[in-house]
Length: 313
Image (cartoon, rainbow, N blue to C red; front, top):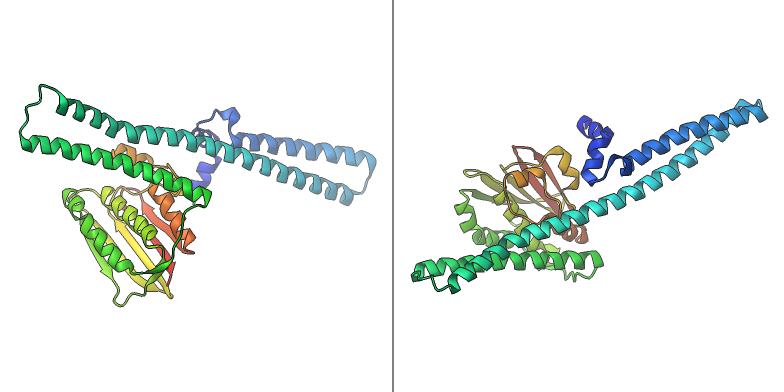
């Protein structure tokens, strides 16, 4: 809590997060407006004292003017802050998409050129490895494109939401099987603790699968070799409760407020060279919100993260 307050008062740090100069920063504008309000209040007091000796009238008028100016400055600053945030997110979008597409496209280019070159005389095993590389990089690009299209539909309110009775336990068990090879290659264990006789969730099956897929994928990716991912499914207060806990890198406190924003990726993910588009959690929150549920997380840097959500039973 104290760290959040300190970060909020650090104007230079706040401006840097938006990619703006100090003079363009919304927080600096708010500070300037605050100084202006103080001078306006003093000026009104001096003018009021000249026309009347009634201190109550002067104080009341001063309070009204100060309040109005404070509200106006707050609204103006918030609007500038939203514009700065949009500008930051657009820059991140360009950076993320460029980075995410450049790597697989480069791999595709060199692999195809090598396979079609006259110098390639590889055996069938090596040829199969190159084809596997082509398949994986194509999959990555298709996945990113699909996520971008889904985000666009979410923002336009054009995502069909067909609610059905769904067994989350069955979906989770199927996904654990799908992720088994990835988990084994990462030397990460997956433990699933499911309450007996779980009620069905009333939600779109394809969309909740996207949510669970994203959360399990992230948990494995961010867990160090030799770690474990613990999944829990149970009924709490007549609601369906899902929890997934990893023993990974964790999320820095300063980044936690941005974690469900699209295209946002924490600094430590770049340091760990973990691939991602920053869209999975944004999509997850949109789906859970649309289902009238709640999603959240608890995290501590270098100790791991627990994501959870509630759904109506």
